[in-house]
Image 1: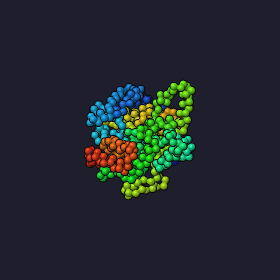
Image 2: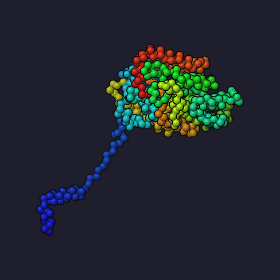
Image 3: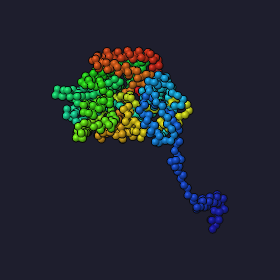
Image 4: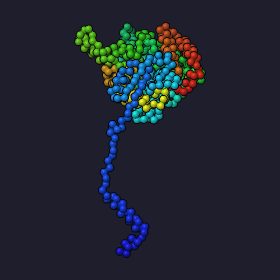
Length: 500
């Protein structure tokens, strides 16, 4: 008892006991149930703002775009259509009510240079609403960036792949060509004397007007592109064209050999190359899987149901044998710095993909303090499901998010077999993982440079001209165009490129 009394007389001990009793009494009080307040979907929904869209040179998208928007949102969407040529003739005029521009991908630098679009806001670009890391790598890293900033969101774009008949290559004792030299040898093997006149053994490339330049750049990419070389089309110090170097000449010489074996290629665009493969009229084609209209796939013949069934079986046999591979490459490249051919390092891919194909971009109109409506529309237009609906059947488009690769059947030919779709998905995934790619530089009026290149390449192929002399002539034309635009201006734009 004495010890207890001394404890109670000790002030510090008494204070401690008082606090302990207080805490115990608090713990014994009846607890109030705490309910976590969860906002409903209606409470968290962001109010969509009215949006005005300028659609440049892409009229075919207008109706489906308006329909899909109306099905999901009450706020109105106003789409104004204008042809590309008319837009340029107007001085690229964008009225003050426009929030968003949707346009062909190769127009981006012109819109930037003419101050018609703004970069995407950092908060929006990094947001969960946009999910930038779902974008395939070279869209995120290369296609939409300039001056170190993302100026647009991608809505897809095609990329050349090699589509081939697996059964025909096996029958000829050939493997899928991995280099352009191998492709030429395979073409010769497929065109043995006993197969003369059989166009079904042909290699088809899109060399029609508007496509010869694209095919040429796809072939020359692995010959001229190398790590550490920032520009391969123009000299970064002088803006002089580099088309006369040995890499470009070799590529054109090889293109001449491929085209000479199948002159029909000079009349083909990517859609007709794919159709030739689908019809059994080509063994290998440089193109990409094309959307096929239902009436094209189900077209009736005049011979009745039995003929239709026979045709359907023949088509299915072809489709079951089509596969997709990377475009051919080369084990060596021309180092223009040292003026010599160099063997690629062991383990380095021989393929260098050309990523500058026609595509679709969407950007904020030049800032007028009304970016929320634009950002809401951009997030909507580029979300995976909308991308599949609006762009899955567009010839100028292609998968642009990683999620699209898992649903590749929504893009391209709906009748293709599962092996074909799996091989295409794998090629796309691999091409976006490769560090070394080729693009045409983002400079003013790049389309005019490509038109001159296209015209010169086609003339070389049609008239069997010297590759060296043809590229020299194109170089002189490029020089004249650069002078008319302004060499200092083009040099400045070239320096600002991040697409190297």
